[in-house]
Image (cartoon, rainbow over all chains, first blue to last red; front, side, top):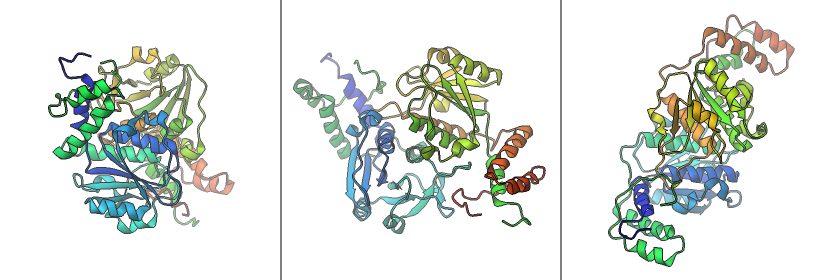
Length: 223
Length: 223
């Protein structure tokens, strides 16, 4: 790697950072299927959702399947909560609206929910849905409208479509403050050194003067 | 069930039929993970995609996980092909454009592909992508644009977002001919009788004079 121009992976980290969001967050409660949880983490990372909240209400802490996330969780901020009440308190303190996925004729169709407000989209267990504390604290309950005999979507699919629908209508490419951006940059540059002390020092030297964003393809790992 | 008004499940079948599509089809080649295949079938059914093509090029015929499809495949037309060449011949004969999912900087972003043309969206194996015959016969290669470190999406997520994006821009609610509609109606009415000879006869009597579409929620199975 040449020292004369900024390392490619930092330019790419800047491109990722320029599209990162925290005003939209995903909450998973008691998701049982590691495949689903892992696919959700991968989807969130791929579309720039920085924060994922994992709530254990009735079961055990979920395991994450590396073969499916392909390491996506390394770039996310994961929040773990013991129970819905604790998660709700944290989300409320941070000013999030709470939108709960719920399959009922009384739920609002996703496209009718406001975009560009700080909001948490809550998805419950594949079988039982969310626990009652969520329903009591929801600003709205929503569903992804479907047209088939099958009304419910696979959990990871429901989350993916929710994110995609919201982002396709968002007005800004990113919503991070300069401070949040600096915090993530420091953490990511350190991780991108992959344990090399020399690279760590090199990358640190770019923290105050980061390279221009350059979106290279992620599978282009050679540079 | 009252005989004086049309059975609810037929009214619901009519609502499903009114939103059914065949001009958009999904092709899966050598998908290895039964979770993925099953989630794809469920997503296609839920969003009204009638035809799914399953191509076995290198491996074995995939198994379908009923716990994940929750029976969605019963309402679909599944086409099985031994090899990509055979599938391509069939799709071409039926006038489909072939759009191949391919993660490369040379691929077109999904939203740039034309909508409302008869088209097949082809998704390859989770690890190796599609076989070379598809690339040679593709009208275009496309990708779902992402913004994270993780460039690739889980297979079932990529298919779901592709369908959602296409349908959100489609101009018509359905594209079936009257003849296709009649064919599906007969097959569905028979299935909805769940093996009861008496219900079969009752439902048959509605074939020439079907009830008005009425979208009731699928979990409302009591009526």
